Image (cartoon, rainbow, N blue to C red; front, side, top):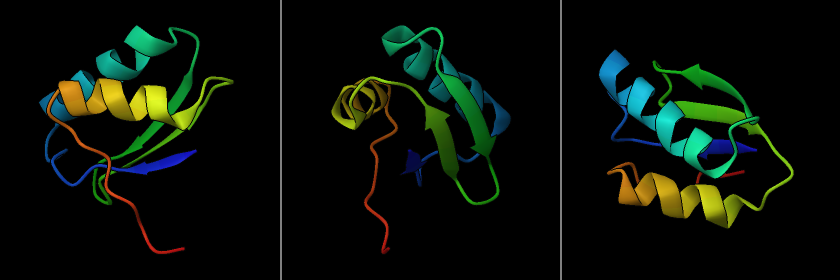
Length: 66
């Protein structure tokens, strides 16, 4: 799943995003594109769980146009 996180603007943000995702699923595969402010992650857990954890960490997920 691809998540757009407009508040992710630096390496520290990327580390915080990674920690938030791993708090939901420590085995999730995570690829961060800091320039596009996106995260591509692979997990069997639902998107909503990650969106909730990211919002709590200060990185709300914003829907993107398909």
